[in-house]
Length: 74
Image (cartoon, rainbow, N blue to C red; front, side, top):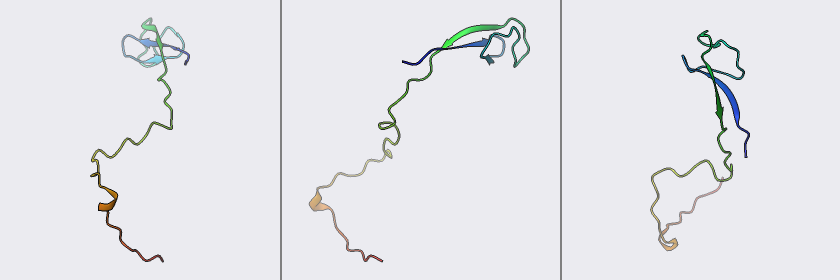
């Protein structure tokens, strides 16, 4: 399980700071930072994430229906 992360979010502009500094580093508003606990996204297994198909599924054919073409190698 991942560790939670604490950030301080400005209620005036939405800016974030890793520490409470009193003044928002983005909009310079005073005493607008509130503590927010965030969870990092869950890690996925790289083996199973990625390409999920092209969307246009091919037509299923029997092996006997597939035509084989001879191609010369170079």
